Image (cartoon, rainbow, N blue to C red; front, side, top):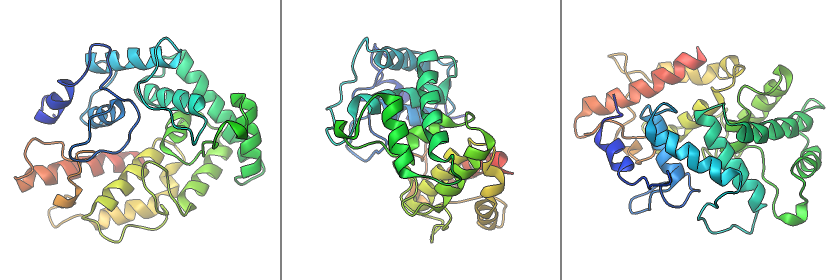
Amino acid sequence: MYKDGKWAKEILNQQRKDGSFGWFHSLSSSSGTPLTTEMALRRLERMGYGKEDTCIQQALSYMHACLIGEIKIPDREEKVQDWPVFCRMILAAWICRFTDEDSDANRIAEQWTQVITESFRNGRYDDQVMQKAYCDTFHTSSKSGRLIRYSNFYPISLMAGRLDVKTEERMLDDLIQRVDGIYYVYDHRIMQLPAVFQSRDASRYLAALELLARYPGARGKLQFAVDWLNEMKNESGHWDMGTAVNDKVYFPLSDDWRKKENRIKDCTLRIEHLLNKLQ
């Protein structure tokens, strides 16, 4: 119901002929910030766009060309991390969020799966093992820049549905208890519920749950969050996260949030979709 709305049209009008939307990397958005390809894809994904849509097909073609080195993303190179590994990771992550038919993206997803499987082989996360497996797998060294930590949006997106049951369980336990949460998504412990439901912090918390819900084993482990969400229903059986969550990232989806019923509809559909995955 959102694909023909004004927010989708606003984004699609900015798509370039090569399928991009300008700079590639950025998972944040604020008033006056130029739209990036990542911002556009995240918004379009939430509005219901998928690989069957022309705009996504064009973006997938662009990202594939970047992934195999035919073209480069226009972003300024970040010197604090292993930039070539980072670029391949973020491109593969977004490709895999829309399709499992790109063999080059799948290969990177499998590499991350191997690294994380090794990192949890002894029953819990081992950072030293992670560093060795990372360097061996991606043919790099710690001297190439800061190693990419696994607890961020991209590896977690890439590995969904690929880990064996034991590794997935160990990783989910680790992520739920991590003090700094999931990088690029939510920077607090997931086990600790947000203090205020009607807040951007709670909206970002939902984003972390949505990311983990891509893993089959998340159902039982996130029951505490399911219980919390059910407690947050209003008397009509719907959810209203308030106007504070209007961040142009996760909300709004409906054209006009001056109408309270549109805000409630957006919030309710998002939470119902999440609960359907976790219950």
